[in-house]
Length: 343
Image (cartoon, rainbow, N blue to C red; front, side, top):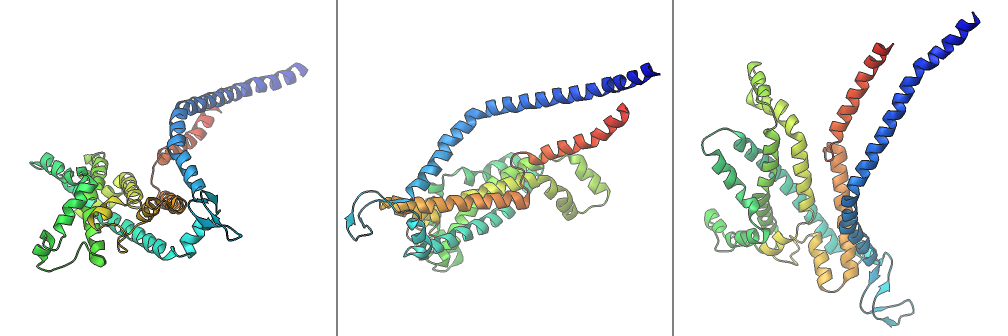
């Protein structure tokens, strides 16, 4: 009896040992994979730190200084570079430059949301057209992508010729509108030119997403009696959502940094089209590098905040988190079955 009692714990320990061993081996393999991934990513991270991290930190440091002549605390004239702390940021939000900053901030936000919404609608329509099978589809795809291939400066000059007083736009409308002057017509001119140029970008990415959808899904929906709108709403949009969200995010980040198109089409120092990048460029061109760096830092924080909220609220799968979560869910589902078989 004693021997029997001694053998049972030993047998139980022997049966329990392999799972712990396998778990330890699995943990060691996972740590090895993580080390290998970190080693392979280290060159890329180093380049990003040099190209992105250092300029951002250097710009923030520059925003804490002021160059040129100024007055110190005792009222004496001081030349050269001096530390001013957060005075450049205070001047941006509540100083003499506050009006110009809020005007540029409003223009930047207005251009971003207006152009991105229009580009998304037009781009999805372009993708649906290019996805259809018809004669001459290759020619249509090539012609739609031409505006996106045109350099922005050339595009600005082209639309400036269209929107001039005796240009094609006024000839078609039969009205004399000062498109390239200040005011609402200038905003509309920038929006039209921007939408014309970059809608094909969204159309191209959405087209790539459409080509990944199996045709059997649409055929099954037709057999079930689904209309064209129901197929678009229940099949096309959900399956093309990852590609569409990435395209919209890229466009938002690009428009937030808009400079060259309004500068070429309308001109600089125009209140109706002045953006944050224009103010930063104007300050830097007048050798006020501290305030220029402050504008650039604020714009960087604004862009980072918009990107974070976009990814979190809309669920843009930028780094494949959805696929990783699906794999984890599959492992959890397979776990109980394995334990039941083992028992």
